[in-house]
Length: 145
Image: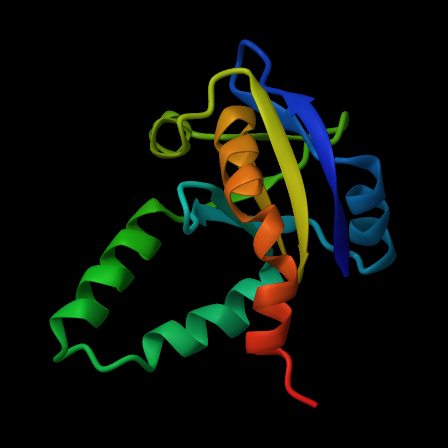
């Protein structure tokens, strides 16, 4: 559903423009509300409400008697917030999430199928440079015939 890589900036009020292609998908699917939370690899995850409910169900089913499950759920859900696009297609990123992802001004917004990721430009560049040569290796390991 979400594909591509887009470069944007955070404005002085902490808002970022959602790429036009993603906003088109939102309109087509009548998506108004999103959930923004800590992602992995120090990025931010953005889920549609529908996808968030599916992910939330999986995480709720993790056994709370295991310390790792409790810790993960606490970190994920304590940082989650509901966001909506304003009339210009921007969402507000709370300071605690900007701090987590080290987002300052320049960001890369990446479509990763069922979610959107927001990266500090420097972090995305580091991640991509460190992993771009592993693409074929990862395909061989992860994709079975």
